[in-house]
Length: 568
Ligand SMILES: Nc1ncnc2c1ncn2[C@@H]1O[C@H](COP(=O)(O)OP(=O)(O)O)[C@@H](O)[C@H]1O
Ligand SMILES: C=C(OP(=O)(O)O)C(=O)O
Ligand SMILES: [K+]
Ligand SMILES: [Mg+2]
Image 1 (spheres, rainbow, N blue to C red):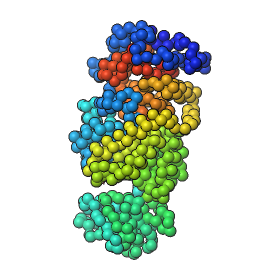
Image 2 (image 1 turned 180 degrees about the vertical axis):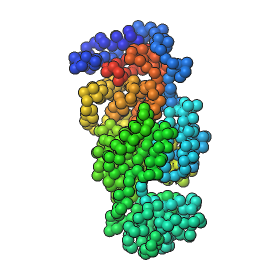
Image 3 (image 1 turned 60 degrees about the horizontal axis):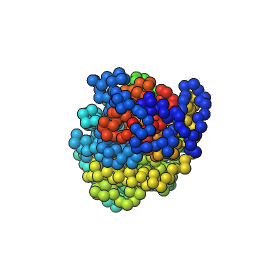
């Protein structure tokens, strides 16, 4: 391969071939792209790579007797084979795990179906249940070769109903009078009584206020206050689900009195976070973020508490406060979630689509992964096919090139979790393909995100590599990255081909699984790029994941270079 790469240092001067520019730093060199004319499915005609050299896996010291030489995600491997190299899925998929999906067989079915991240919502379930799910996902990864990451989502200090004394749901009919109370009740709950978790509730509401369950799934009017009990008349009948979110409205505006002072991370959340750190979750999603400070605070807590581990902090954008401080919050976080469920209960629904687009674009500018969440396929909780409108909504999120789509109730407690996942998968594939065919590159001017010179060099390299990949019709970009940073900078460019990200750490690999277009592998590698490439080509060829002649652009974060080559 040394010979192969060397041959690329002498490209003929073609109309497309840019002239090499002197490097601003001695550590940076650019290996020129292979001209289109030289691109061939039969690279052995182009140069004299020794197959023996390419196959020599022992040349580089590798603890392969302990670890497999490369960890390839079993589900991605199948998808790559099914769809082909360039057409493999770029949009990542998150499933909320709940009673419908927590058994080993159900979790495995989701992993097979393309789940990249499993989310557990700390609003529901107990410690043992959460632990069981996390460990089962880890076991599947280890034993069956998946790379599913785990995201813990905090409960946060929202106002919500109690758990209905164990009932699965309750129906509120038009005109019925229900009692919402902050009292602690003995079970069974009195009839038409709902427990409210926020102690200030009975004092804060006023007669005449409107009470919305789950942003409007049912609606009540406050008619009388009796100490801890608030009598409400149902004005919009609907289904009440355990722990459903509650908002109250006065003169058309949401009321946020003392509840606006509730901490973003409650004392229960801190216990959950300690649990998440101890169990080694990959992401912590923080509910109802109001400011960047809380994110910074949590990040420094995690850094102090779990030296060496890298848990990413995701800011859930779901309140009016988070919209006010959007830039700072996203800048402070490792990613964001457009949490449309609660957001839709706080801002008029017709504003949610433009807010979504704005957050997706801002995250891209700031190089943070972004998740579009809630009600993507809501009807599939009950039905085996989605509505046309839901398919259009999923398509729009894919078209915006969000990093990831998330299932909530559809996978947590719906009747068709696997079908819902497969709808996300097929719609993502179809829209991505359509956009590539139409060559509709999003007209998003990417501004610089790096502050240090060395980061700027990395960013320019990634921008150039992605541009070259598009211009040359490359089959893949390979990036060798220790921290994952260069991989995310490449993902940010949303190139036409997939990005194979090789990293030495299993936790970085799982974290990269959230980002658009990245196919993360665990691989030990050295500073010698030729040797890394030889090893990777051999390993991936042996698994049938790449073929001789595939055009690959390779970059790495130790050696700031761009190489273009055909797989020998
Ligand atoms: N661990 C769990 N145990 C029981 N039910 C769950 C669990 N996780 C999720 N659910 C159910 O799935 C629904 C949708 O999940 P999600 O959107 O995460 O929660 P929420 O609707 O409370 O915001 C929940 O309302 C709840 O009924
Ligand atoms: C994802 C969301 O948060 P949760 O499901 O925890 O309410 C949301 O509100 O959209
Ligand atoms: K939550
Ligand atoms: Mg929410």
